[in-house]
Image (cartoon, rainbow, N blue to C red):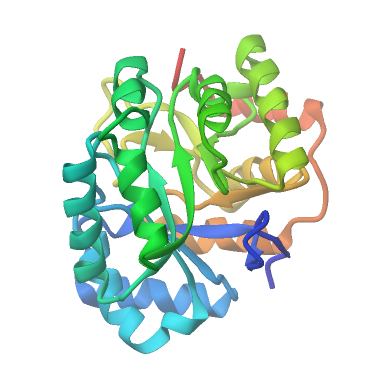
Length: 285
């Protein structure tokens, strides 16, 4: 089974691999149900979704009617004003067929102008706080992509005591000195405050560029158990972080098998060989 650790201050003992439900973007209910069976085979007990993930919330809804107590359920709002965010939150609860979620996150909050709106008077932060006060969520978090994500999350944590953060983590991204420095500062603050740290893009190889995409993720992922295993083990080799699985349902078993096999952090030599052999390059610059 996959290693379990406390999910920050939430009281939830989470598998270190969390199901990233962007993988359900455009699949049938039958394919989604097969993914649920894979999750249960590996003991995964946390699901991360969003209303912007295509049909994901709709596909998860039937699961929640049968298995709600078996999963810590997180969704997001990518709206920036109170009213828009509130309406989106209510819509997510309807699609997920639940009365509440466990975690509600401000989604992709890295643009300064959008941050000012979301965090200001009449902003989305007020909506998620009200949702918590009304029992529609137990915890609140913030997510982000790109090289500014850790710095922006630090800014967000200065403004509000979020329970969780989510941002990219992979070997290539951490070769960016500024990103690595900001990430380490964020990790220190999160450890001090017992904030859960979720990570994404663990198996990113690079942008598709002129290649024809063969997977449903917007970036080109690594392929094969060996390459994916090294990338997943490198992320899980960082104590205290969680890994959200990639957005392709057909990659799910490989990623979860890699998490299941995790024992230790690969060496820099192993990772440099992987980068060279696979032609890995940064997704964000």
